[in-house]
Image (cartoon, rainbow, N blue to C red; front, side, top):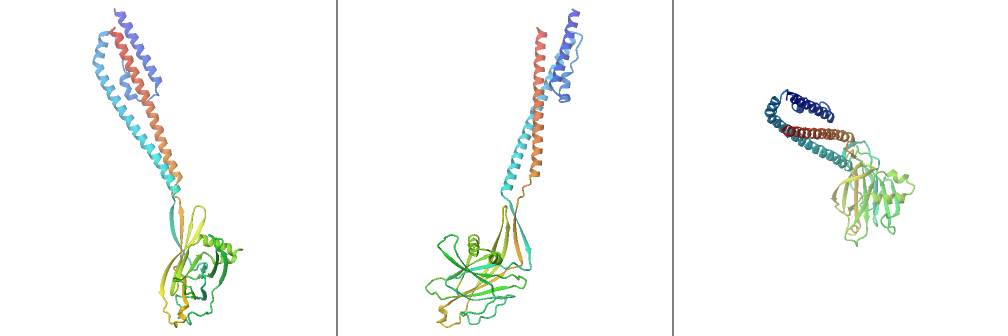
Length: 356
């Protein structure tokens, strides 16, 4: 009888060693050591009565510890799944923000101060009106008019250009191009006077257009094509008869993704002309226009892409590292749960065999 007990205890001791070897091979060393030490420490006893007593007293404790460990394992898995979801959302948000900033650059506005501007081109379309005078003045001082409505001497540089319009090849356009002011410190201005003897119209106005440099026109090989392109790309304005229209110009340069563009912004003020001519002379309507620079600042607008690829790459690397760590933890946790399940089934089968 004593020999049978000893052989059975020796057989159980061998089974315990084989189980420990299998479990050590199924998982990397050092992981979940604290969680499995209590379960792996099962020492063989020399008698059947002592073994039964230890099993009867240690089974509830081991069961409670196993349940507690399984509960914390499930909680850890849930936390890591939550962190994984947050990491995936962060990666998606980072890529979306990068694409949004890449497709929608912001504008940076700076002001550059200059002493003088390049003389702009002032293209006027008088139609049937006639240019009476064009003179340069300084310091915003315009002397009183002498013989308004009659031709007077001028000192402006003027070019006449005839071309076909860019939107209709059948419409012939005549432009009177005047070299604009340049000395902004001394408040250089140009004062122009037109007359129009057409009395059948209800409203009368003269259209004008501004382009960046007057020298571009004089240096161009084909002035007609140059004016056609200017009319296609620049805006046009008007000033009315019977008033003095004071136009103050400002220059805006925009640097885009592909090319740079130059445009004018203007502020205009209208003053009524006190016509002191005789009634016969008043049938000839007069136009007055003054062109001047508003201030010595050039507004420069640049499109800046605020998306930094290196910051996005760094964030994505951190996110992918977190995902890799979470996946590795989930893998080891699943292996540990499978091992605990197998051990529980083996212990249950062993107890059934002992009872039989």
